Length: 506
Image 1 (tube, rainbow, N blue to C red):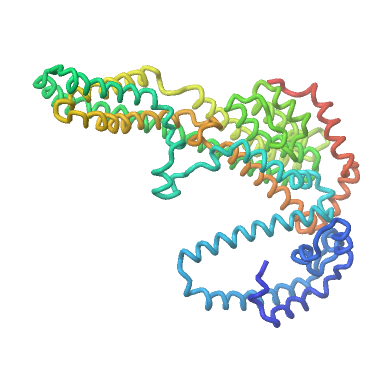
Image 2: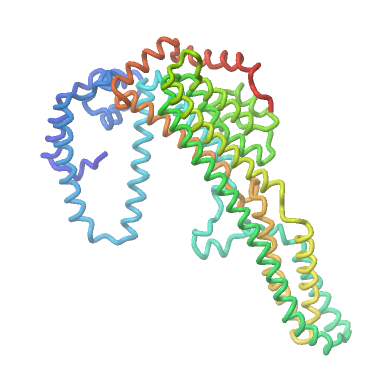
C-alpha cells in the first residue's frame, strides 16, 4: 500500500490509467453491499477488479502486466525520491518508531484485506483458510487469557527502574521462609550480646572468620554459580525446544501446502492435527487434562478436541493422526506410476522428518520436567548456605552491634536470592509463574503462522498465481470429491468416525 498524500496527481493518473483496462467494480461492490463491507475498504484492495478477475486464473494479459509494472515503478520511484529528500533530518529514534508504526500498519492492513476477502466469499473453496480466519480472534483471546502471567510481566529489557521496583517477578516466595529464619537468628544474636550480656568467644570467632573467608566463601560461591548455570542452561534448552517446534511446524505446513494440492481434504486434516500438536504439547508438559476449545478454534472441532484431551499422551496422539493423513496424501499403490511413487515417497519422508522433529522437542521437554538437579547436590548446597548465614551474625555482632541485623539480612537476601532464582527456572513450564516460559504465546505464534501460510496459499490459488490453471484444476478436484461449504464439515466428521478403528491408542 502507498500513502496517497505523498503521490502527486500525475502519479495517480498514471496508475489509474493502467488499471482502468482491467474491469469495473460493479460486481465487487454488489458483493460488498450484501456482506456489509465498507466500500472504502474494498477499494483499498480490489481497486478496479471484478470478482471474475480473482477466480479465472487469467487476471492480466501480457500488455496489462507490462503497463502496470512500468507505471507502478515510475510512481514508486517518485515516492522514494521524496522520502530520501525529506527524511534525512529526523532523529534515529524517530526513524525507529516510524518503522515500527509502518510495520504495525502493514500488518493491520494485511489482516483487514484477509477479512475483506473472507467477507466476499473468496475462500468458500478453501475451508481451512476460512475457518482459521473466522476463529482467529477467539483463538487469540483464549491464548492471551491463559498466558497473561508471562505475556504481561516486566522484562529484562524494560529499563532499570521497572526491573528494580518489581516485586512479584523476583520470585521472593521461593526464599521468604529461610530468609525470615536467618533474620530471626540475627535478632537472637544481638539480644544475647546486647541485652542479656552473654560474652561470646571473640578470639575464636575472629580466627574462624579468617578461615571462612578463605574456604567457605569460595566453596559457597562455586556451588551457587554452578547451580545457577545448570538451571539457566535448562531454561534456554527448553526455550530452544519450543523454537524448534515452531520451525518444524512451519516447514511441515509449507510442504503440505506445496505438494498436497492433489488431496486437499487429507492435506487440510494433516495441517490441522500438525498445528494442534503445539497445544497438546503445552497442556501435556503442564500436566493439564483440560483443553480450552477456543485455543484450537478453526483447526479442530470440539469432538476432535475432546478426543485429544482423553488421550494418555496428547502430543503422540496428534502426531499419529497427522501421520495418518500424510500417509493418505502420499499413498502409493500398484497403479501409481514409478516416477510419481518416488516423488510421493520423498515428500512423505520429508513430512515425517518434520513430525519426528516436533516429537523430539516434546521428549526433550519431558526430560527437563522429570529430571531436576540431583537431590544430593541441592541438599548439600542449601544446608551449607543456611549454616553460613546462621553463623554470620555471631561473627559480626561484637563489631557491628545492632547493625548486624540489617547486614545479615542483606547478605542472606543476596545469597538466597541466587538459590531462589535457580529453583525458579529449573522447570520453567508453569502458567502461574511470571519467569517461566510463555508457552501460550509460543502456541499463538505457531497457530498464527499456520494461518498466515494457509491464507497466503489460498490467495495464490484464488489469484491464479500458483501454477497455470491451478484454480480450475483445484475447482475440478473439489467438484469431483463434492466438497463444498456444507459437505466438507460433514465429510470430515464422517471420515474421522471411520478412522476410529485404525487410530493408534497412545
